Image 1 (cartoon, rainbow, N blue to C red):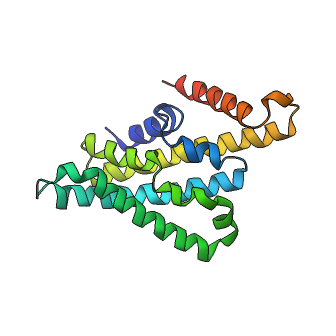
Image 2: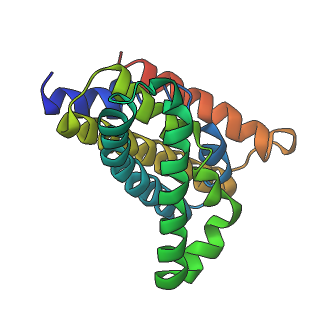
Image 3: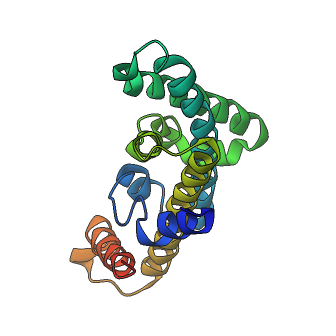
Length: 187
């Protein structure tokens, strides 16, 4: 499979959030403002891309040679948790405002099933190191695209005349469903 095919499929056709429904918690929780959503998307992009390299090396250089493949999930969670801690430290020093805006959702990247799911899927698809990095980066870009689009829609809906009974979570869920249906139409 070519790298271009991997990118197009992961971003648009099999979008991790809108088609595979992984990573819904940060998608709904951090999508009230475009700036915050973009910050979360960049953090997820950084973690997913680095996790592709580290998880691939851990799996093929450590777990497979010692026949510890069954430890994959635990090992991947530890790798992702360490990378998220690194992102937290960097954001706290470089962008305190974004760090505060992301709040509890930044450490939740550790338990974001999209990050773990993509790492496991790359191994299951038997991608090489470069293909795995490409796949993870493309999925992170798809996550960022979805969360930023959704944040833009939510910002516009805040200014629109939404009936009182639909304000807040109900209109957000309806909008997320419609956005998901639009992406599924690309299949």
